[in-house]
View 1 (cartoon, rainbow over the protein chains, first blue to last red):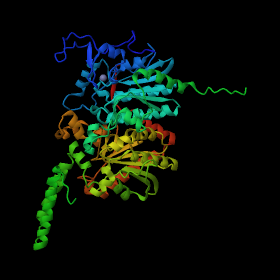
View 2 (view 1 turned 30 degrees about the vertical axis):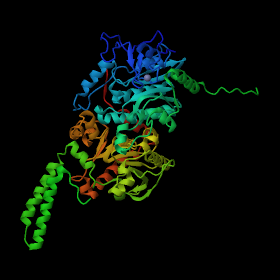
View 3 (view 1 turned 120 degrees about the horizontal axis):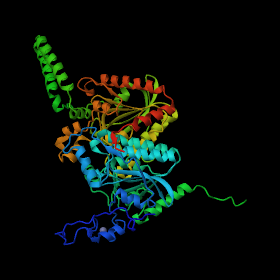
Length: 296
Length: 320
Ligand SMILES: [Zn+2]
């Protein structure tokens, strides 16, 4: 199992930079970073070795799709599908910036074509279908490409009799594609119905942040729902809810811990245990009944 | 509310007032004002045509939200007989923002379900302005499964600003409630018609919207986000709602072009609120037409067609 931080890691969070010392902190960029939660300074290398979890406070920093795939698969087992799918500006969206420009900028920033990566992998030798959303790409909003790729990987899992795992992170539907994006919620859910009817397991791993159209479709439909500590998960954004209610929100509102207490998720799993626990779940789902008849 | 006139409707209402005035003058003074009336009536018709045949998307959104527009129960009462309302999700409570029950359309048994707005403050407190909580969606699904058991078609009337964004909604998992409806509606063996009669507010609308056909009224809208919400995000200014409404392609004709909506239900000139009977007539005729078509399909074919309808929605290119 390829835990990242091992010598074979296929990615690196921060490229070495040539920028000089940060004027505010006098800490050379790239070597150190500031934790978003506890504001403590942490060695970037230490952060990476710790799976991008703050060693001081346990903050789970969002990671890229590539990093997530490496975390949840046997080294070298990932076979990507539908890598060529790209968004188009069907609505000719007339906003402040053009959708096409937004797409190009995000492709350049991430090296990805859109916000989800799909394929088949093995974990501890168990083959399954995997989709991972990457929040860096336009907030991993769901447009036609995300919806189509999630649907295709679900259909592939159904056809090949594979368990399906989706790692979610999303701000919701992609506004620039209007109703085409809203309808992806139904499309993906329909594919999941067929997968379920084929008797196949579906596990969701909710990561920070998972919201709106993704919460109200495939993120909430797992046979088992796991979440990373501290992940914010919800339908409406906290600001909208605060404005509507004109009241203070409950302590820890919409965190994974809050949702666990409210009965929405099965388990909160720290990143360092995620691969192990996922492998166990897959094993439980795929091993079948092994009770021996002792009388014979 | 005694009167509610939208900004762009003002020329129409002014002419209507003038006509009323002339009628009063003629009555009070026993005068013949036929010539004046004829002229004004002609002008009124022309003004109506000029305004209502060239509505912008934002103006249609305003018509779709018109507080005098017919709501779900108005249509059910106007086009159906023997409506028996059923209540509750069997888990938490009865959500009055969604109504549903058995009804007959020209003798054809149906399960009718719909989001319901209130006509006044008291009603709106009860109906939560047509914004359902999770239990509303769970009740809707329960009733759809009853229809499936009974083997009768389902008609869902959609008119909601959206699912309710509140603490209680989140605590009881509004996202899960909608998601489960989306998944389970694909498994129903009876015809399903989704009819957008006013506001099609995002996921809150789609939560009862997985139909074999999606129909929409001429001045209704269906959108991934409200124009105000979109304007606030993209322009950082809600006063750009008209631009946002145009950009989102949320009106009936745009949605037909995007191959999301299957049919448009015509409204009386000026909007459904100006003539309830004419609006209901259009709704009834269009629903009946599509029910006849769907009733000819087998349960398996209905499921397949529903899957394929949604399966093909989307626009992308494949660079390989
Ligand atoms: Zn920290």
